[in-house]
Image (cartoon, rainbow, N blue to C red; front, side, top):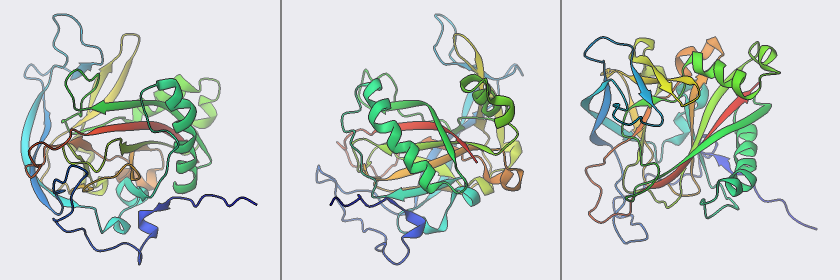
Length: 301
């Protein structure tokens, strides 16, 4: 008789089993100390175009054309450490959640088709088991980021939200055109599943804002121009009332869920989590560059 593998446990359900916040003596596989606890760091927020034009950026930059027509505004913020207090946060209340001790049969993350064949079903199962009310999941893309020179995609150091209400609805029409009218009448969410590939994360950790502290007017729709269509993302204005967090020393077995949109109006202000990579001033010299994968999902129900 075989024994089923244990399910990964959401961090907010591990109360009583989580050890206290790790100390600064923790080290990574290089023997370098892992930064822990609250930290002040500079984050890049939105600065409007100087000519007053509608903001846009090109997914694939055009020759001789600036990739974006808006600027950045740097602000120092205090980021609290989620490690040890994960149970305080949830998708419905804060638009992000944490799951620990998640195993995977995919280890290379070099071949997109293998990722879709092996890793996608694991992510779908994770979401169905851990997102309240979810009854259907469609994974529509993923992005791998690596810090080394020559990488196709590096960590993004601009505060943003991947979707807006407009682009969330457009995603359904794009990926499920025959069912879109019916699906748009029910609850639908877009949730990103983020994890490192070479944890524990030392350089360019991910910062996330508590959505309940973010005002609607902080979010600026930006045209996201693809070669064949135009989508929409949101840039974020700095607001001192925003509360920021990071999850120190994220391991390969950790999963951070980031909700980008929720059609349920009862959790409207808790339906979008601004996030960005940031430079931790405590990162030890010589620390390995962060590698990560983010899978984006339409979640119904």
